[in-house]
Length: 350
Ligand SMILES: *Cc1c(COP(=O)(O)O)cnc(C)c1O
Image 1 (cartoon, rainbow, N blue to C red):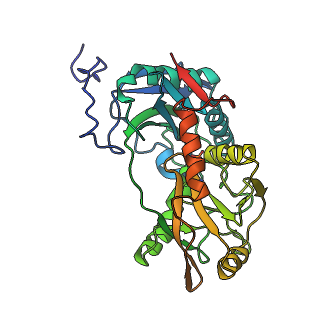
Image 2 (tube, helix red, strand yellow):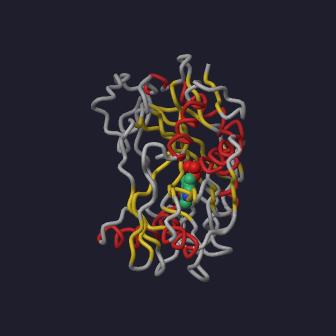
Image 3 (tube, rainbow, N blue to C red):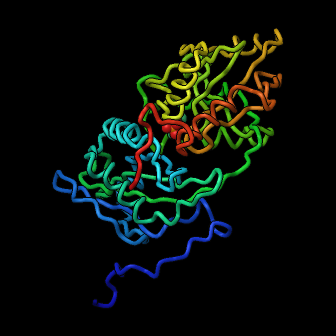
């Protein structure tokens, strides 16, 4: 091998030490990569994890053509690995790519690619309660060119990072009425980088007031609740599970869909409809039992312990017998193979 050429030889395999692994900031040994140019994708390849070289003119650095996904793999009871709802994440990724005028991915690249990558780094998926391997697929525009236009070159990559069970304390959230996340016709339904960048400043202001996250409201009237961070919103008011409809301004969460399915199966009353801030505030004022929580791949179910509406704080129900915890447990049990996977949600890696 010539000097100065990138070293693509496999580095010595690291021993994964879950006690000392910096989750979130460090990746597993391998990654998946494919390049798009001349109107087509190259075959996806699994290579040792390494740094990227990009032109400072790479369009993703300037004009926001970026899309990502986030999904998880678990070590199941049988010792095999389950990837949760791989197919749904594939379809959503392509939907996001289409909205951002970026080239869609084939099933082979995404689904087979992730299966192979997880198999390759399977030592990192350990059998420990609450442990998961977080899988991050993404596509970025790489053409080096000044001027806003559709890039003609892209990189598709998948990297993985192990995640330990973390006890997350219930969140304090604030209904946001000054800033918005997404407007009808915008990019809110796509997992596009810009949506998250724009949310940081309002979230920072909320943090300074003692809240962890904001609850976004609709851009036109700021009357209806939408979502929070990278989570969809759910409320259980008097035993009825209510969640706003996903669509143009609300990202269609896979966790949301899974929880709705489990709730319907239990014969809970489920209402997918616009939910106004006023309705929630009235429920609190009438002392109704209100559970409020976010649902998403990272935390699965994140209970809210405090909800700021206008000048008042309200306190949802977070005791151990809250329904949200049992929905979360049921979902976890399906992922781990402790309950039958009657919906076909797990892709089992042999
Ligand atoms: C990813 C994400 C969610 C949750 O989706 P999951 O598929 O459940 O992880 C919800 N809202 C936004 C804005 C997101 O980016």
